[in-house]
Picture 1: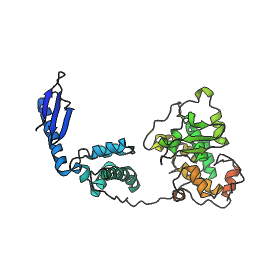
Picture 2: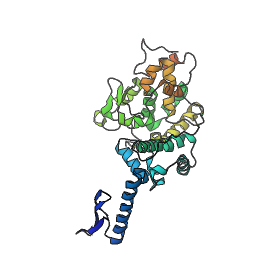
Picture 3: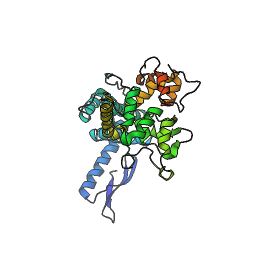
Picture 4: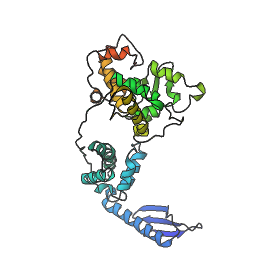
Length: 347
């Protein structure tokens, strides 16, 4: 029996009835009878298609993505994909469609960006949809990425950057001592800092791999943190030039990119260095390289830095010159919450 529409006292039309065994009682969200009737017809068509061909015939990408996020899936990078695939049946999306979307949304970006910001989130949503029976499973191969030269800071470069960091002074020092990611530091709250213990807690919701961990800092960071008045130890630890907290973004390092770039330019000029191409993320590569020079125990370095595997750590760390670990300790860089320890072997 066809669905019916009736108008409420508010003037809004409502769709009611049972069609193909499906009970319907929902608002049409319109005061136009003509529009309400079109919505009713479209709803009947959807119910009919689903009853004959199953959910794969009607479930859209938007519905799949929303269900994926409701189930705890990562919403990062999905907004432009939702706009691109608006109204598209999730079952009809192919690999060619994914490549077209990546090219259209990120036309001037490298394959690594396509992989991270288009293929990875699409793969997650499509495979979630497949698990619900809304489409066939799909295996998505990433685009080949070219590995550029891994950049890490030498001690002189790091010292110059610290001196010229300006409003990012604490950020730079804590990044070099703790190995924390840019987004983790910019989101760090005073409630999670143990100043006396030289450590801070990073909760699952704020880490890239969704794993809670404790990160450590040394005397350099501790001295800066100790200068903050007790009354001001509320909210964000890392603040901008005018005292405001940084607003969270998908690519957290980009929030401070301009300020950081200017700090690098000042450091280059002051120390006759070339810090062109150095980014906030370079500090994490630097910590990995320094930490491995100070302590060759890759398992410990992996745990402190929050990598999921030693193979990931090896992508970040470079082989420092022989004896560099001793130089790092001699300049009082505490990479594990301490300056010296019997179980640290500098190489």
